[in-house]
Each structure stands twice: as C-alpha cells, then as structure tokens.
Image (cartoon, rainbow, N blue to C red; front, side):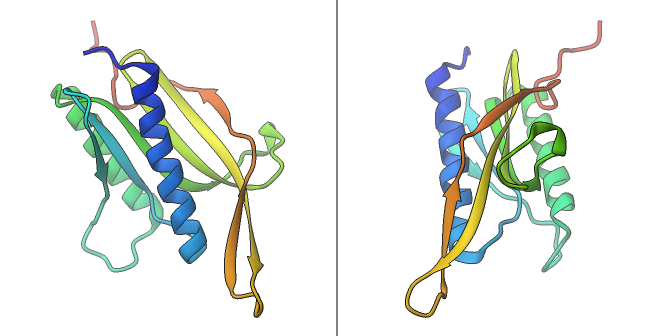
Length: 150
C-alpha cells in the first residue's frame, strides 16, 4: 500500500498533539508513537519495559525495535516515533528543547523537529503553557522500512 502525504500528516499531527498535551500537563513526556495499518488506520503506540521510571532512551529503543519488526513483517505501512530532545546546535533552533518526530513510510524517512518553550501562567503561575516554534525536517536513513540487503 502506498502511503499518501495526508496519511503521513495524520501520523505527524497525532504525535505533535499528544506531545504538546503531555508537555502542557507534565512539562515532559516519554517516547511514544503511532502506527499506520495496511488499511490506513492510525493506532497509538507506547512502550513499557517493566520499570516504573525507565530511562527515556530505553523506551525509545523499545519502540524503534517494535516498529522495525512490524515493518519487516509487512504489518504496517507507516510509523511515527516522538521523543523529547535537545536540538543539535548545528540547526540553529530558536529553542534548545524540541519534540522530535521520527516519521517513516516506505521510501520516506525524516526527523521532524518542533522546537518549543515552556512558560508558566495563571494567577499563581502554576499552569504550564507551551509555545511551539516553526518545525523543520531533516532527511535521514530509514530505520523501520529498510530495504532488504541484495
């Protein structure tokens, strides 16, 4: 199945919306993702390794492996993996903090960075506010939908 730009946008929007919600509610988030079925249906994906507070990198690697396995077995047509990261200095971002979404479908692989800033508002400055900056994309080698070795 060929994935349309609209379907890729749905994966991106799901991850971006959920990440912003988590940042607004908690000021941080663990890696999470979404998968696109062969029929084009979006499904949320989370990871759990049995620890109460595992390092986020462990959850990222767990989801990365799961998405790669699903793609290898032909079970999904697309996936997005979101992480809370520091933007590499080379990208001259307006903020060092970013939501990074690893978006991949067959023949398409990008990191989408969405720099953000967290502020506080309200009478007692106890409500978190999240300001998202302009996103930018970085082409990458595929991790989920790798071409078979010839």
